[in-house]
Length: 212
Image (tube, rainbow, N blue to C red; front, top):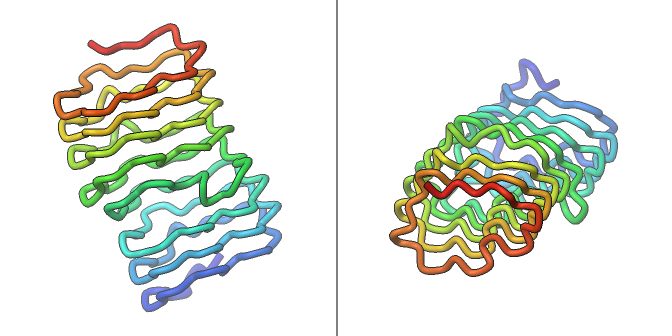
């Protein structure tokens, strides 16, 4: 869809597909480098199940409520995104309560400007598969608090490639991830961390924790 249509000069895509009946969309070829708002772009797309938004540059954009009221949306591919500095209170907050998202591909994200990952995947209650972690450069991040808060369907996480050298906040990072059985935090550096309050609170099934 939209193949051959130039979006190079577009600055607003608010409600672009709102209330449409698509079940799947591949918008990876869109040039969104000048877009400043995606507000409610897919809002109320109640049939939408899959989205491909690969290689988007959203450094200057607002994504509030971009995916709100998309109860069938289970799979999003966002490979190669360029992200802004404050990447907090993100995806599932914008999908509104009861997120249906099960899988997200966020490999090769450019996080060079990102300092804040607070609540990045908080509230993704159905999220089971995150394709990403080995490719993220988190060397400039200082806040990872509540990053997976209430991601209650995650079974395992491997964060061993995360660079946490400058992180100061990790409180509530895995709070209420009650289905998590294993977390690999090998190579985590906590020299600068000042707050770990409730980091693993209510991780009731956690039986493997690698802190080596």
